[in-house]
Each structure stands twice: as C-alpha cells, then as structure tokens.
Image: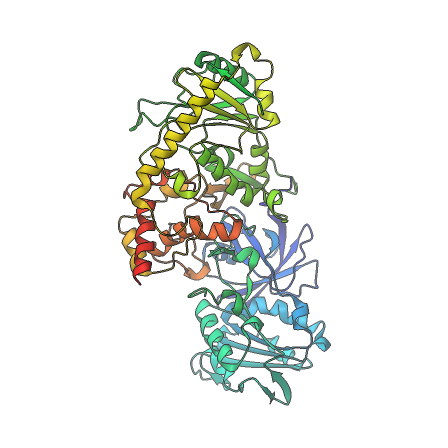
Length: 281
Length: 355
C-alpha cells in the first residue's frame, strides 16, 4: 500500500528575501507534485518536522513550486538556515483549494494581510492565466510597515494586468509611504454597498462579487464582518482557514473545528460554511 | 455461525494451538497492579499462562494498543519508495469486550476510509495490522463501577464485529464464530469441544441479562433527558469550566480511550537519514491546536475538555455517523482528577436546561 506519510525529496532551487522575516523558496520536487490554487502541502525540514503551507506559485507551472514563508516557528526557522541546493521534503497536495469555475464571469476581490498574500498569489497567477474569463480582479493588501510588504517587485506588474487593480495599506504612517494607512479593512472603505455601482468604472455587484481572503485570524474576523456589511453574500466569501493541519489526511485531528477537518473540508471555506461556529477564526 | 462448548483446560489448550503460528495476547491478572481484578494483556510465549482471566469487565487496555501503536515509525526518509513498509504479524487478541469492538469501528472509519467512504486516504499501518488481527471477544460477566456501555447504546456482550466470541459460564465457555476466520480457529480442534446444550445457552442468557441490568442500575443516577446520540452540548463556558476544575490536561483519558484516534507526527534523526514517528496524542494539550506564529483556537483547558467530550458525542456522530464513546469507563478509571464523564455530561446538560 502507498505510504501517505513519506515526504518527496525536493531541492531548493532559489531563495528570495521578500521582507525582513518572509522569504520565497523555489523547490524542485524529484517526483511531480501538482496542486490547485488554495490547496496546501506539508513541507518537511529533515529531522525537524513538518508544517502546512499553501504554495505561492502558479499552479499551472508543474515542475517547480514556490512557497513564501514567514520565519515564526521551529520548522520555518530551521528552513531559514537552509541554502540553495539543500533538500527538503514535500507531500501533498491536500485540501479543497479554490474551485476556479466558481469565479467565471465574476468580480473577484482579493484581500490579503501580511504573509497571507502569499497563498493568494497562487490564485492571482491562476486568474491571470485566464484573465478574460473574469470581470475584474481587485487585489487589496495590508502589511504592517512598507518593509513588510511582500512581492514588492511584482505588485506594479500585477497592476498592469487587464481588469486588475492593486490597493495597498500599511498599519501605521511611515516616512517613505504615500499610500493608504490603516488596517486592511480601510481598503474596503471606498467600496459602496454592493448593488450595481461602479468602482473605477468597472461593475461590482452583490450577485457577481466574490471575495477571497487570507491573513491572520483577527484579520479574517474583521474583513468577514466588513464584507458582510458591504453586501457580499456569505457563500461568496472564501476564507483561507488557519488551523494546525498536521497529517493533511483527515486523521490526526489537529485541525478539527467541530466535525470539520480543515485539511479536507478546507482550508478554503466560505463564510456560510463557518457561520454556525461562534468564533471560527 | 457455529457454537461449541469448551472447558477451561481445553480452552487454554486451544489458545496454545493458536499460539503455534501466531502472536496471541490474552488478558491476565497481575498481582503488582493496583487493581488486581483488572486484567491486562500478555503475549503467550511457551505456555498459555494459567492466570488468563476471562471473567469480569473489560481489560485495562483496549485492542487499539495492538492495531494503532502508541509510537510507530511511519516513514524513513530520504526515500523514493512509494510503498509503506509495515510489520503486521498474524495476531490473535483474546479479551476485547463489546465496547472495544465498537471503538475499533471508529478506527476503521478514520484509518480504513475506503471501507466506509469514498476517499483516497487509506492508512497502510492500521489496515495491514487490522487485516492480520483476529478478534476473539468476550462477554462481560460483571460490571466495573465505571462501566456505562448501556448509556451509549451498547451492551456488555458483542453481537457482531468479532471473529470468535467467548461467553464465560460457571463450568466453561461457549465459543461462537462470527466470521470465516473465526471458524478456522476451531478447525482441527474438535477433540476439545462438546456440543452446546440448552443449559449452557440459558445460563448465558441469564448472565447477559444480569450484567446488562447491573450496568443500567449503576447508571440510573446519571440519566439525562437527551438521548445519547442526540446531544448538542453547546459552549457554556461556566458549565465547562465547572467540569474542568480537576482536569490537569494529562491526556490519560485520550490514551486509554478505545476510540481516540488522534496522533502527533514527530521527525528525528535515524540511521541512514531521518524517521517520522506517529505517536498517540491528546487534544487536551495546549499545543494540540496551536498554529505557526502561536495562534490557538482552544487556548483554555476548559475549551479543550469541551472539545474532547463533544468530539465523542457530537462531532464523531456528525462526521462518521456514530458517537465515539463506547461507555467502557476507562477514562474515569485512569483520571487522576476523578473526572467522571457521566457527571460532566449531566452537569452540562442540566446547566443548559436552566439557561
């Protein structure tokens, strides 16, 4: 029988610093691992352990996989000591991911907070590959300081994409920052109650607007409230749930929320699906 | 189904015959244990120990110990071999009770998913052992104070889920086959059996009824108005804090539980590289739900004990179609805080009714 717990050897091919504590690693798995946007993998640092990450690269690129990782815990810290050419392990993909067909003909609001933009980048790149299928892609991203903004070099390119806008905010004023200031929900202030009003000349309406949200739990909580107030339908708000997905197989129990396994029923879950929980985030 | 009667000496001989080609575990009383009336499993070596104890209530441990090891290597890496390497010698476990067989049903659903659901994640380490393990269940002939199977829809004797069942009587045992594998256990041993007569079956009926009544009687005080499989216990923090008062979060209840399936993966250095072990885990530990960066969806012990008890009664039912408490009472036996699940449920249900 197939061993579900074996990590597939993957070589670090490139390392790119995004911010003081966030780094993008490019891996080349020795056996093919293909994933869909929003799915996650278990990354092994040999002898240290595993942790779940959603790749940040384009799911349509099959040979390599990028993961953008913040140095916060045991596994991520051990990874931060590794170099190009070193070998890690990857197994997966796991979880549901986004169903891209749900987005056909829709306006897609992408809300990222901190390192939460990393998994969304995979979705964004998948959307860009088929940009004509979507009415609008509105990327709204909040970071703590200008330094903490990730994908600094990519954001201007994204803005040039057809039907796409990029809005940024940082938590507190900074000398070299001329953009918006305030937590990420300030980026929703310009959004009128969803009926059929124009945003930058493009339509955004309650029937066709979807939101994909990823960030720290506290951000999900407040963005969820703000989006519902703005008139987004709960079934059209897709959250990327943060739990301790340890086996990825619906067995170890660590990611359970009530009867749900976030590693199988999630990590992408709509506001409607989590509404029955008192504090799902 | 085949039924035969067997005396004690012959039963020990029969077990000895099984042990010639398989690992056989039997429940044995140990004088060194605090409660000598509770037997625990011992591997049959040269001879079948004469301290084999088949009377009474469930053994100290459940068969989970043999099918889902407390610690087990599940991967060695680096490796390009996609196949799992599993050691699963032919094994016979004599002694599981009806509650234990029910606990294995939860394991089957979680680890042998394709047997019950259309899913791809079959666990080779559990399945190989399960396939190679013969279950010889035993009727309870007495109830421990902490037994409450009847409260959870169970009975103190098994009606299915076994390969062979043993009903202990005064003068010997009735053996009942429950599968082809069980029938094979009896093959070639006709010299040891006599036919079952109506005195034997009458005695079994009386014994089963009397143990059932004893379990029901001792649990009357814990009765609530909600059926065991209809609980919605809610998150009343005061009610849960009250039942958690004596909990130290040690997780003994999880580990002894016949239906607690959760585990923790631990990686470490090993010869030739690294190995990944799978270890019994406890949802009562603070790190259980902790995420990278220190987030925690259940930072308080009361939330974690709530999660454990609601997992048993609600989440398993909603996910897998059956509550995962079998009423074996072991969690009460091992709790150093003397937390009694029956009292806890009654308290929470009563407080909810007041609100």
